[in-house]
Length: 240
Image (cartoon, rainbow, N blue to C red; front, top):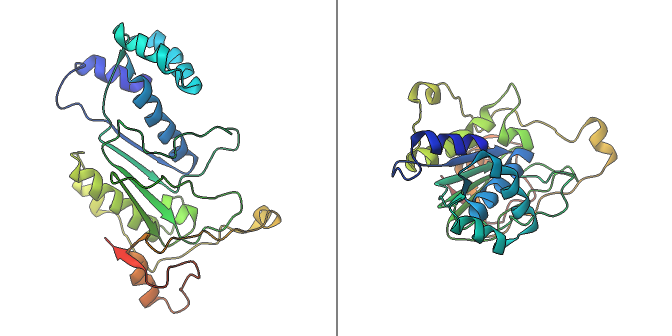
């Protein structure tokens, strides 16, 4: 939030070309969604000293005090062009998560989710249905979708998907960097259910019949002989 406040202060608060893009993976997705909720309720504090005040108002959902600060000019309302997240999981220290709805200030939300993640303590936190939201399932476990493995063909599938959407929303993209990505629907699918995680049990993720499945999963099902997840819908709705 402090970075956004400085950027708006430097560029001018009411410039038409101001755009906010927020991204996150895993618990970083959770943080990104909370940040979007904070911005929706409180906007951007004009003064750095009001950052903590805005955060406390958001945690308490104190709408009356928030509006009073907006009326006084201490908080500046903004919109968020895009909120892009990969496989959102909840932080273990936060029991009050009220951002399963896409915040009103977000123009469009995108969520890439892992079909094959089955660790009990890694349930994906989906948004509730909203026409502004695109939630898509990808082959792989948690970090196969969000990134982190050396063999990253699967995560590059989800990354390119997110970049394509961001570009359509006006985000400047370095073409040479995108060309270096090597998306591969048939690359290594890792096993996250190993080591200490085996002590906690499993929970296969439920995928609704109406859910959108990325076409990279269709390619993997067709080309990788032993890949046919039990949780895929009987008639998957594949889409780019």
